[in-house]
Image 1 (tube, rainbow, N blue to C red):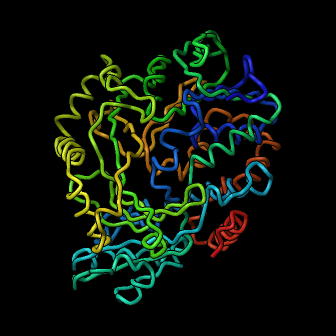
Image 2 (tube, one colour):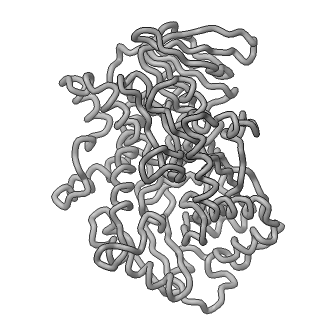
Length: 500
């Protein structure tokens, strides 16, 4: 599909139609209405890779229920919550931007992409219960988490999430809960933002268009574009290029030739979910329930039992089950993606991955080859009465984790989101995964601060950004900002119809 306008030689070219490109495009256009922007996407529809509704958990990551963000090694011997505070703060930026988009008409029908779903942390066994109790005690003291509740009472747990108790033995249990959690369809949100962008003067988009090369000529980038329908190839130029192509970002970043891309490699991790859409089961569960990470599992593979609301239909998701793959993309990926990404500057780091991450590699292979019976055994640690005939296995998205060539870090798989920007700020790219989509507004804000700093320094630019993200230059985590944070959070939830 194409927007009415195909923009030649724009100011900005966006590669990819996921949550990052859509957020950057819409935010830049609001920041500077004079900007001319063109977006290219190689699939037929928007957001079909990592942002697709079924390719991620749809959790509005706010550090509320994700136990991997609160390791048990704080300097005071208690649980360390600084990462959870950081993620919560960043998610506030996303909520503020989405609520601005809803109020101003950039997006409509907000329940098509966001719905209120409580976030729960669930543990079992004395050691895990002691950990969760300590975590709750620490988090409850911070104003971000003051509404969190904790219980070991089975009747209360049954009220919050009855599936956790159905068929459960007498092992000690504990759960924390925050009602103001969210379930988000990032693909639907991306599509709404891009369609709005395509209606703005000087902006356009085109699907089924693949970027095959990038070269710098003077102060502009030239991109080679292949129309996958007509098979014709053409070029376009822009002052600024954003590579938001998910797993496809690394090969394009390498083609750009920028010095900052040297030494980077990619380590792809596939995923799968168990899905249940049986009404009598689905209606018993309205929560996102996160547990403890098993052994060598990466943080993105922490098990959780989630309510999902996609296209107006509720379902329950469990997983993710990680898997070994050499593809960088789910829809358009090829088994040669990983081998073709090897360069003289990153081969040493890639080889070290195999040597220093043997438990992870073994875990991924084991996960990808396990039987349905084994997968069901993991599910039953959350839902003891789960019946195999009620669940089906589907593929999730592929995440390409960054491998950096750095002192002390060479060959280490980095879980999270890496932002790579050229020294002249003319090209920027993202690598990595969770909690990327949830904190997309914060990540894009950092891109804008670096690459469009001059615009932000103007009175108009500053005011426009404050309208989109009121707290972008404030630290809401500080105690003195507690009333401000509560006010902004309430306003955002009201605009997004998520108040509970």
